[in-house]
Image (cartoon, rainbow, N blue to C red):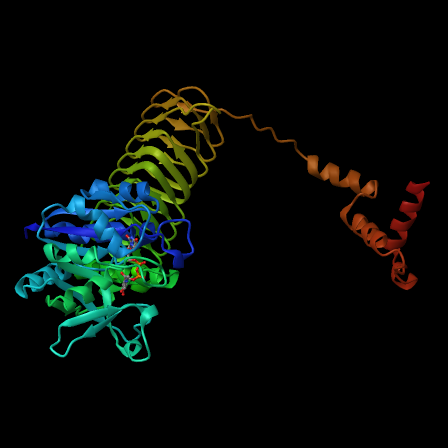
Amino acid sequence: MRNNDCVVVVLAAGKGTRLKSQRAKVLHRAGGRSLVEHVVRAAMPLKARAIHVIVGYQAEDVAAVVEPLGAGAVLQQPQNGTGHAMLVARRAIGRAKYAIVIPGDAPLVRTETLANLLRAHRAGKAAATILTAVLADPTGYGRILRRGDGRVAAIVEEKSTDEETRQINEVNSSLYCFTLEKLWPCLTKLRPDNVHKELYLTDAIALLNQQGETVLAEVSPDPHEILGCNTRAELAEVDRLFRARKRAAVMDAGVTIYLPQTVLIDPEVEIGPDTIIEPCVQLLGRTRIGARCTIRTGSILTDTVLGDNVVVKPHCLISASRLADGTAVGPFAHLRDGATLLARARVGNFVEVKKSVLAEGVKAMHLSYLGDARIGAKTNIGAGTITCNYDGTQKHPTVIGKRVFIGSDSALVAPVRIGDGAYVAAGSTITENVPADALGIARGRQSNKPGWVRARRRQAAAAGRSKPAQKRRRAQRSNPTRKRRPAAKRSRPRAKKRAARRRKSRR
Ligand code: UD1
Ligand code: CA
């Protein structure tokens, strides 16, 4: 596809008042991208001479999105309507023969639809060709007024409709193809005689028709494609449609998704065949997943690369990490900022890994923090191991060799090295390097005191500090009017003896 005689103009200068937002409408996101990025990407494969994006409200932010894609930004200041936007673009457009105009808030449009519109326009030798759609509820859109011969007479904006034109359900998508030498003279004749006091591009259609030019309309086979995002409800609907499109493509490529409506997959995500995705999973950014993986429920992966046969158990949060073939993580694992797991490494529940490499077959199965660490093959990290990588100002590395055994509840104070084959005794706070094959032990020595508890119990009873005595006193204090227990019950010999003892000790 090459269209050297044609430019694309994306109208993206408006604020989008109906969204009630600080942010320009075209910068809002749906389906994992900003609206204007979707539009520019749909236009790119046409290989037009240029893509001009008309910017105005938050111009710099919009330009920053589209310029890296190869589009140019044209400033429209102030924003005096869609017709005015085209006039502003005239200098930048130069000598192109045709222009395809796309509103920046219609992100669902597909490249094929744009190509078909241009084809129909060329074939019909038209001055303008409008992409239209037939909607069950046309409210809010400009209506297409057809002539007897099927050509278009005019577009009537919602606010200018009367009883009769309001019933028309063929609407203007705001997507057009123009023959520019016919359009320019009409644009200079536009007048702002409407409620918004703007120059409407839609008014150029009636002018072209009045001058005997051909105005055609192509009905979009899928009315969804023209959906604009003027309200938050429309934005949500557009997002839903994008997500459904992506999931359909992923499933077509051989991926199983259960309860697909609950799964969010960003546009650039790639997934290998026979991978299974459970409900409520989010796969975001540039995440790439190999074949035969399982991503279990509630997990969120961002910019993460998975090899083949990887299992992500429920409720893991993983970002900017790499998990090689046959690794398994979770449930409830947090892998962030450059966690690298080599083949068959395993991370279990409540383990956080940051900027660390876990070599082949490493296991860290329970309740650990591993940060700025390099861990050699087949090493076992016991439950509750912490790398103390931060001294309050700087981060320091922990280097653990191969086939090391770190006992549970050890704190490894970085910078520190544990040699190959070494052991660290459970509960150690390791502040010095442990040589290869050595045992590092760093904790207070245990001593048992025989009979200590029994002696203490006796003392407590003697002083009336035994548990039953305390309970009775508490009850008495919280309810002073409470009657003492009836005498009959207290007449048992043991109770009598106890009472006597108490009287004596009180004296
Ligand atoms: C427009 C059409 C309407 C059509 C509808 C389809 C006009 C007058 N009306 O209405 O017939 O049914 O789209 O969604 O064109 N923009 C600029 N500069 C401006 C004004 C707007 O660049 O001065 C941009 C906006 O950022 C937006 C696009 O043009 O991306 C369309 O403007 P919007 O205000 O959304 O027009 P609608 O009222 O939706
Ligand atoms: Ca709109």
